[in-house]
Image 1 (cartoon, rainbow, N blue to C red):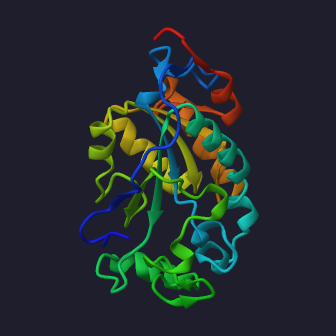
Image 2 (cartoon, rainbow, N blue to C red):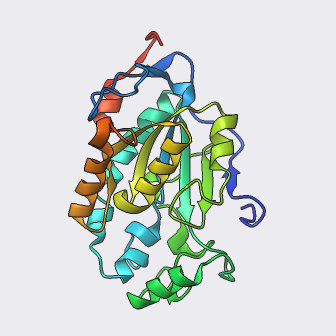
Length: 253
């Protein structure tokens, strides 16, 4: 793997999936039929899989060590796996993110480390899945249910948002991506932060409710509800099946 201090984006040699002729939209979403511009060619559409890591949804990982029910953070895995199969078959770009810190913790803010220690899962400390949220450790890896396929991007990030201190925006623009489908964990933290960042950069965003999860169901519901306010303040909300149903070949843009 490429040293994350040099670059935070890695990619295998070849892309996956046939690409020509597929488009998505309109998707039956809330509060508006997505996307705002009617349809999007899948060559300009990316699925962002945010932090599907052992530390967030695996036994012995960070979330488990904090005492939360990992069944809640794992809830979105089946729908995400279904969406990924569809995305790969229809030429969408797939991007995975991993939150983590350098082994020497040189990129770990002191307050973030302190807060994690207060709840009994200090970042960098040893656990059943290796050092918590440290790059290269077993807990930092993406779970097998939604593991990257050859040719898919992996973006390593030190914070909650996938745009902060990463090359994600450059990656998207270089690949002519204008529309995003967001999956991952947790809905109210890393997914929401990334959606807000993307919206501010002009990307048309759709968060998939059944492809996300949170450590508290009320936080999950509130985060999704916030998206629907003010006519779709950050974008829209739908389910994976809605995207699949709205995908066809040969549709007009």
